[in-house]
Image 1 (tube, rainbow, N blue to C red):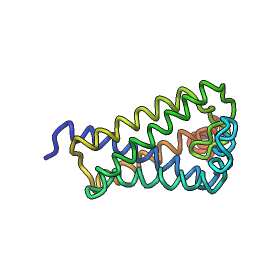
Image 2 (cartoon, helix red, strand yellow):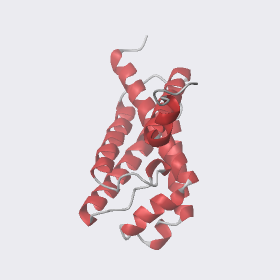
Image 3 (cartoon, one colour):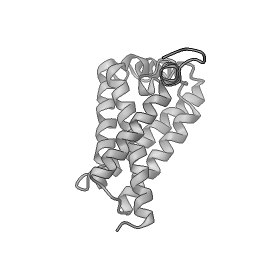
Image 4 (tube, rainbow, N blue to C red):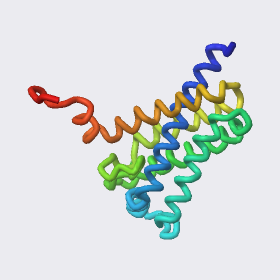
Length: 175
């Protein structure tokens, strides 16, 4: 039976994987939003093209998926540390340069600009990745299912402006 620390890390891995996979898939579908945010930060041209953003997206997805399986969890942890540092760095750069363009995370064209949220999220991912380098965590079917549920909830939250009316009908209407 897994210890409470292992179960906690398993839950953290589900959340980290869901965040990375959802963010990566959003960038794969709509790379221009994140590319615009990077261009606003004056990142060199070749690093904010649609192709470059899609490559970042694939790395995010791979990092998230790697946390879910025993054979890839530790290397995935190292990759997640690097991704977390990159996200935190972009957030810091956004803060320093007064970013105004939505960051394009999760493919959301109306999201917040690169800033403090990215710093906090990047730091959290970095800590989660580092924990995978030194601690053991459950992997397999339970973490895959937990990640799928976390992705669903994250998707509903990110898209709440159109999802909420679908979930909760207006008062006084008949279904």
